Amino acid sequence: MPLIMGMSVLLACQFLGEMVARGLTLPVPGPVFGMVILLVGLLVMGRVPTGLRMAGEGLLRYLTLLFVPAGVGLMVHFALIGRDLWSILVTLMVSTGLTLAVTAWALDRLNRRRGGEGQ
Image (cartoon, rainbow, N blue to C red):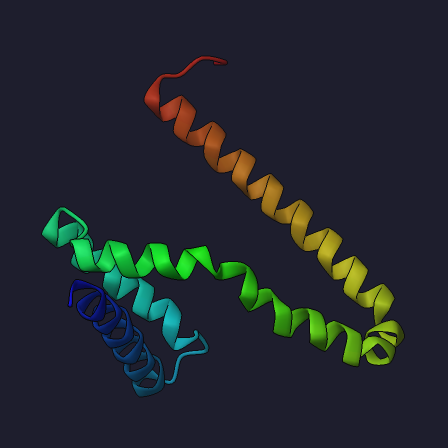
């Protein structure tokens, strides 16, 4: 029974997130809002309920299966990807570099605020 309750909480948060995303017509996926709703709920509770923990661990155990459709899509659309390969590679490189730079900047800033080493 706790597992069913945990899955119900996850699905309810995803549903609420979907409603928020569609209701506000924002270009953010509903599950992202659902994760924020779940996070706020867990912060308010101060702990993770047993059923939710069981459901989350069960889903994480089979997370690798979710990559199968992406791999199949890569193989099926290989010619399409090949036509835009350079733009895909440039986008990946620029976005990765930008992410690393922003992460390093944020870490440096947080470290300085905390009075950490390296000042």
